[in-house]
Length: 370
Image (cartoon, rainbow, N blue to C red; front, top):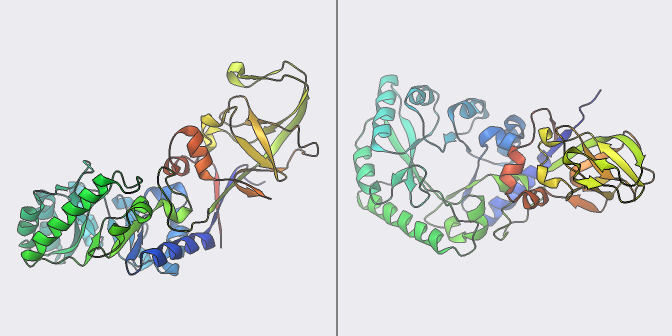
């Protein structure tokens, strides 16, 4: 037997997307962001592929994500804050940590001193995200005091954008001004940061000034998967890396007036050829596809009828008289001349591509195509 729903990840296309981003932002380096198991796709094969393509460091969100990648031979960096009990294990393993306040700086310094090592940290500025980090007005004094702590190397200075999906965002430009002010204050004190970064995938496309001096590193997540936030523009050529397929479980001819699915949100208006497909919201399909989305069978679009169930959905096979049980059904990706991109699902759901990719179910088999 094979799994009913299969998500194929093209590692070759992933590497192409990485190289396309790197070419666009050069001479900045590109740090892939592979948090949440590479957005649920499977971090091991993806990380190895990106390192082989030239990634020199990897970013994650929390300690257990970092532990999975320590054998890659490149620096692993946590972007979010770390809890007190996480500091010493991470310092012991050489993970680069975020510095979000003076208290965490002292704790990291003390752990590094106990272990007889030097801990590398990146100072996290809050220039307007409002989520975590050192408030930019207070940052010069915190950086000054931190620089005097033993066994601590201030390797980087970074911030994050909440509105970078907006082209020519005035608030993003103000964040850049705040960052440059902090950087200038630090340099006036003789404190120099090896890595200076602010741009995420949205900013790579919509705030090119965050991809040039004084910045020398960008963070790239969703763009590597060939997706982007449709609210903004796209500067870098990207190709989708995902194809999600399943199979046709049953084909029936239903009489006029037959209700389909929970809530009877669809009724046949005539005799219809209807197919039952082995996929539902447990596999990550948004409920918003109900009566609105389509799947691809034999290169033809088959509209979804009724409400999605947990494990199944039903489709209109009127234009597919030859469709039969066992046929491949493309949920995401290309079949012939037609394609269903991740962004189509995001638009129907009223969300963004991150949400769609992270929501793909655990029973969906991930396959990595070289």
